[in-house]
Amino acid sequence: MTEPGLAEAAQLFKVLGSESRLGLLRLIGAEPRTVGVLVEATGMSQPLVSQHLRTLRQVGLVTTSRTGREVTYALADRHVAHVIEDALAHVQEPHPTDQHTRSTP
View 1: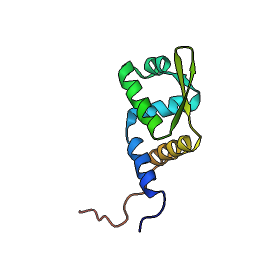
View 2: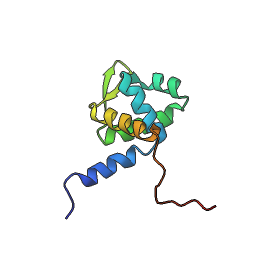
View 3: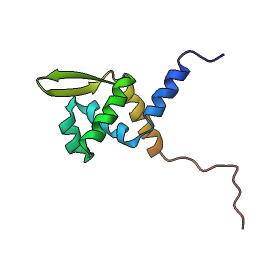
View 4: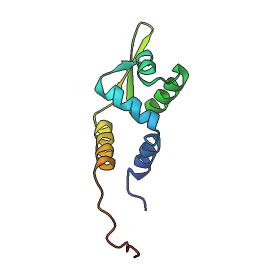
């Protein structure tokens, strides 16, 4: 029997497994942004940014609002920002060496 929510969490981590999508989420987490602003900030092509944003929207990580012809993307909630910040803190902290590894003379 699988614990409730594990499949959804696995899908979330699969989507977060892209460096490009993580970067977009960090930018959007700082403040809502349009596709054009995200293209400028990342140097990615407009179609690629749009594709990543579509994926993020499909899994409920971002929301959109429209003003005229511009679509602005925002984080759906702050949980994902915390997950990303915790992951970055984890990979940047020093890790103790494995105590069971023996060095050879």
